Structures are given as C-alpha cells and as structure tokens.
Image 1 (cartoon, rainbow, N blue to C red):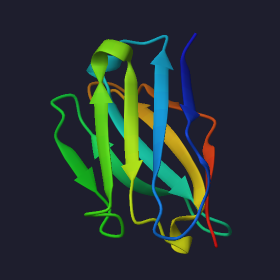
Image 2: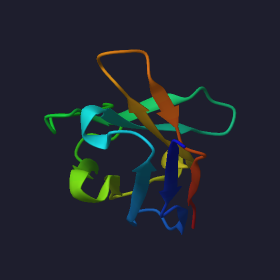
Image 3: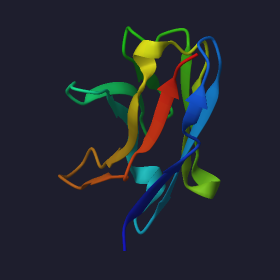
Image 4: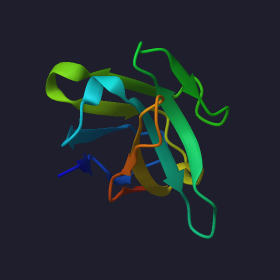
Length: 117
C-alpha cells in the first residue's frame, strides 16, 4: 500500500522556521522525483520545490533562498526546511512522488502551516 505521510506543520510567527517531513512507503522511493506543493486559502495548488532522483533541486521564485528541499533515501523521507516564514506562506503543504519513467504519481494528505503573529 502506497503512503506518503507528512508531518511538521504548525503555527509559527513571521520570521520563524519549520521543517516538514514526508515519509514514503509502498514504492521504490529512490526511483521517484519528490515535490512539495502548497495550497493557500482560496488559491490553486502551486509547486514549491522539487528534488529529483539525482538530488538536483528546483524552487519556486517565491521561496528561493528561504526553503530547502532534501531527501534521505535510506529512510525514504523528503524534507522541506522553511526559514524566514511569512504570512503568505500560510497553506496546506502536500508531498508528491512522481516516477519520471511512467505515470505513477502519489500524494500525501497534507500538513497545515500557518504563519501569524
């Protein structure tokens, strides 16, 4: 059974930090590109960060220099370190796994991040 389980969300003040984790099971993790998306209130889901199988990374312009995506294949986990958080970062953050060689794609259930004073 495929699962992506996110954790690490919560309430943080502006300027603060959070580290999201996504633990994968049920598929060969190291074959998959891993992504973090987010969906703010009344907004469409947007791609935040990507880390491919080679560990090359890419970021949305809105988070460059503040967020860092990483992966640990040994523990089947992808991380999103979020620094200098701002109210506009408030959203549900979703973990996504996509096999670049076929159409296999999986989503986590999401974790809420709220940035507010």
